[in-house]
Length: 438
Image (cartoon, rainbow, N blue to C red; front, side, top):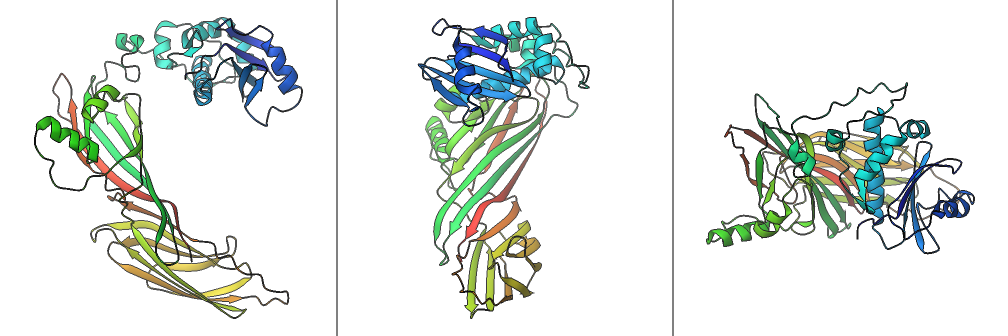
C-alpha cells in the first residue's frame, strides 16, 4: 500500500512547527503535540524512526537541523514514506541552491507550500522530479548566501515530461556520435566447507548503462534468460536455439522499463535516460560458475608452529584473466612471524588483521598457484585456547566473465530519424562475500 499520509510536518530541533500540510481529515491538528511529548521530550529520537502513538504512526527523519515528520492513520509502506522524504529534500535543495535547513524553510514558505501541493495529492506521492516540476513551478527559491551551486536552468520543449509520459528524459538531445555503453557487473557470494562442498552460493548482478543518444530513442535488450527465450520461441513458433539459459530471481527495473511489454513479451524495452543509470538488478541462485577453487590445508604442529598450504585454481577460460586477486588466510593472534614460498605473486603476514595476505596482480584462466607458509607462534605459559579458524577470504575481479552465465543476445536502438549507433558491452565479475572454511 502507498504512503497515504495524513499530514506532513517540518519541525526545528526545539519542536517548533516551521511548516505543515494536512492532506486528510482523519487526524487532528494536535498530532504534532503528541510527537513532541512522547518522542522529542523523552529523548527517544535516535532509537527508531517509526513510532506508534494511539492510532497513528509517525515516520520521521532528521535533515540538517530540521525534522520531517509524516503522520499516517492506516497501515502504510514505511520504505515508500522515507523514499518520499529523501526525494522531497533533493527537490527542495534544487530550488534553494543546494541547502536545506531551518533558514531555507523560513525564507521559502510560499514556494514550499506550492511544492507540497504538487508532490503529494490526498496523501499519495506524485512526481518529485526537479526537472519536470521546474517546467511549471518557475519561481526561484531564496538561495543561501553560503551556497555556491549554480542555479539549474529549466528544461525547454518537454510537453511529454509535464504529462509524466517520459519524465526521465528531455526532448531535443543531439549528439554527433550516438553511443550506448552497457556493463553487466556481478558479485559472487560463496561459503565453501573445508572439504570443498558448497554450503551457500549466489550471484547478485546489475546492468549499468550510459547512453549518449539523440532524440527519443526506443531500446530493446535481449538476454539469455530462460523465460525470455521461451517466450520468444512461442511468439516466433520455432524452437529455441541451443545454448545456456539462466533463471533470473528478484529482478527489479529502472522506471524507464515498459513493464507491460515485459510481462507480455518478456523483453526489456525502454526509453533510456540521458547519461548513466542502472537499468536493472537481479539475483541468481542456481547454475553459478565459480571463478576460483581454493584448497587449503592448515596443520598445527605443537604450540609454536603451523604449516599453511593453499592452492588456488582458476576455473574460467584460458583466454581470460583475473585482476587484483587477494587471498587472506587467518592465523592465531599469537603469531610472531611467517616465511613464504609462492609460485606467483607476493605474500606477507599482516598483524593488524591476523592474516597471511597473498596478492596476485594478474591470474590467468585455467591455471593454479600455490602458497606454502611456515608460521611461528609465540609460546605462552597460560593454557592455550582452541583456535576458532575463521574462513579464508578472497577478493578478485574477472573482466569479460559472468559467474551467472548471463549474456546480451541483442541490443537494438530505434529512433525515427534512423541514425546509426555504436553499442559497447562489457562484463565483469567481482568477489562479494567469497569465503572458504579451513
